[in-house]
Length: 240
Length: 83
Picture 1 (cartoon, rainbow over the protein chains, first blue to last red):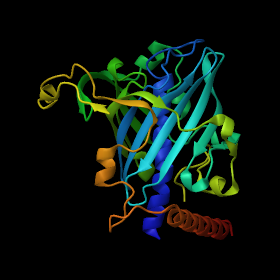
Picture 2 (picture 1 turned 60 degrees about the vertical axis):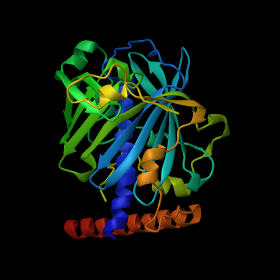
Picture 3 (picture 1 turned 120 degrees about the vertical axis):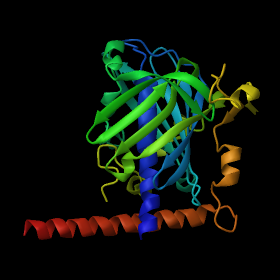
């Protein structure tokens, strides 16, 4: 029972960590105000992730971009024996001075075709909130700056800027560098009292010329089976 | 295709900065598992066999059953606490 619960928790923690990376990528040190961030389709980054319950691979790419909308796609692979793979795609549109998560899609081979996420799966997570990273100005973001430090990750060594965000018992230290754009994140260390809050992510490589896996025009509705498996983003991720 | 930039510099990474981060060109393919990582650990059981989709689907159903059991336990605990 405990091992099964651990695997269940891993899938949920993966979602949380990916959310944090995505938040940093699109709402991080750069301030985009009313404009969409300048992103190049097919670029992104791959990360090694370590959790207390196992290891995983996470990648994020720019799936599409236009003047009115950006789409990012996540790839996850659980590196334990299950080998679960998952792709998620999120569409963002500017709304006032903030970005709004307009649409989301998920593809897990076990559930068949890609599915469109319903609104309850697009709202804020517990722990550190998305809004913690969606800052309206560089000054606001710089309030979280710790300093500039040399960081070595599988992709190389850089003098990265270290930031720290704390909220609801979770502390996230992250290091960013321009050469790691479009995501910009080199390393993430999250800690907290809860199991789900403890993980690290390190940049393995930058990605170029990637094609998105999910085609929104071919996505179906979210099935009952998938709804039961996925954590609602507004609910506790590991409260069981 | 993985392009490793300045491998000699990376071998002394403790002291030196990389002039460029390692980059992989996916040549218009979708993102999937990194070969190096997957060869080591990903998606294989103890006998080295890839898990088939049916087996994984069954596992997901079992996990869902675990979740429901725990939710029921939590509901009963809440009920006891309230009483």
